[in-house]
Length: 236
Image: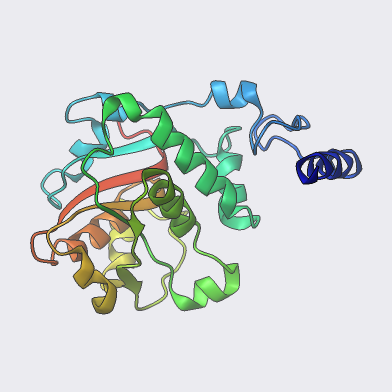
């Protein structure tokens, strides 16, 4: 009975204030979550996880030792699918990130990309940015993966100083902008010793933030690191 009541309440809410697909702007059906079926089906998947030494893995070669890396879909500024990241990051919709991350785990199952991952951690936000935004979107994405895999999500890293936005910076300026920003959260990081850890962020552009964070994680004895981002600028 309660399920029926919830269904009717949800339907009434959708009539009063329709939920819209962030990609195409059309109202979502009652059984559609965050994205409509057509936009979800047309998601511009990278499928990096199916490629040996893919473009994302090549991007980190010689910078930091990683096991493997992938991103779920391609990001292009101004393109319809860019609105997904914008909503997750700036429009108080981090749960869409968790949902998409869980979908990524399911979609990548045949690739075995997540096999052997023992813990998940996220690129952190400095407390000043966290206070302003109210949440860390990358942590929501990381938790979506961890929950789907049934493993732990550990906040193993800390951002110790704020940095200016990376959006309009080139590769060198981005790298300089984040130097010294991240350190291990010692109380949490010790639990990752000897484990295969998945480092998660919302999007990869130049990879400077992921490189800095992965470098810190590699300081944990015996730890191996793989990388996942929800989206990626085209790296190849």
